[in-house]
Structure formats: C-alpha cells, structure tokens
Image (cartoon, rainbow, N blue to C red; front, side, top):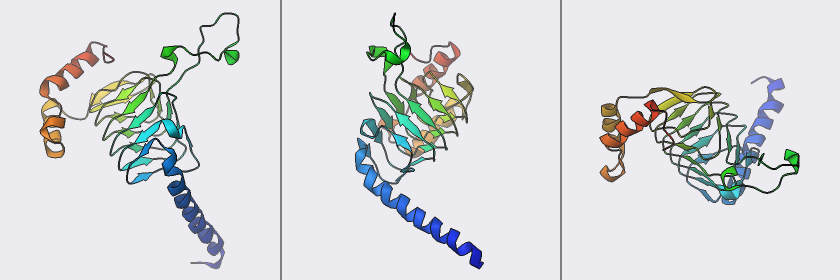
Length: 204
C-alpha cells in the first residue's frame, strides 16, 4: 500500500465500523427484522411499518415508506435506489390546492408485500397496494403499479410481464427442491396466474 493511500483506507475502515454499528442500533426500530438483513443506515425508511424476513439485502439509496405497512419476505434482494411508496395524495378535494389536503381516503394508503425470493433491480419504484409474488424479478427502472405474478419478470413504465423465468413444470420442480409440499404452488394456481396476466386481470 502506498503512503498516500493510508488516510483513505483508514477512513473506509472507520466508516464501515460506523455503518455496522448504526445498523445494529437501528434494527429494533423496524416492526420486525430477521437475521442477516443488510441495509444502509443512512437510507430512508418508515421503520415502524416495515417487517423484514431473513437474508435480505437492501442496496444503498433505498426509500421505503408506507403508513399501512411494507412486508418483505425471506431471501429478497434490492438493488440500489429502490423506492417503495405505500401511499398517495388525495387529489379529489375541490377548492384546495393539493399540498393543503390532509384528509385521506381508504384507497390513498395501501400495504405493499414483497414475497420470498424476489429480486428488485436498480431504481425500480413499487407503488401502493402491490403484491410481488414469490420468485419474481423486477427489472431496473420499472414502475410497478399492479401485482406481479410468481416467477414472472416484469419491466417498463408501467411494468408489464416480459416473460417467465421457467415453464410451469420447471417452477414445480424448483419449488419441490426448496419448499415443503404445503407451501408450494399447485399447477392449477400457476396456470391460473398466467391466464390472469394474459387476460389483463392480474390484480384479481
């Protein structure tokens, strides 16, 4: 190591220690936080409304806020700069500018669910009421406004299904290797899910 690299290397070490210490201190602020959860303690979270499972990585630049809750399952990966927003402004009030409206409608704030084994790409935005199914992938930069079916790959603005990771038979084989029989998707459920997407009815 060159002498001029010593200060920078020392600072990176100290900064790493600070971040790890802050992460330990902040973890209890979440509604629930499982084992092996990695996040940047300087990011923005509505801590008390967020439940996180085990083995979750949240990339730097995250912004997760929801009054009615964000639930994140196990083995989930978030790239950097991902946003989850579980609320919206009430834009229906006559005679007021939107910034002055404080009252909310029931549909303005809805929970968000990220199921197990999901990968959310860099800069994706997930909006209120969305359920992201198990094994799904959300492409970088996608804006997700509707439910994401299990094992689908979605992208775009607004996000749409681009393809599925595997055939129904391959998904069933994959699940048999990972999950107990009671926790696996049935063939009928997987086929119905794909049909709903084909019919444009994936939120039903």
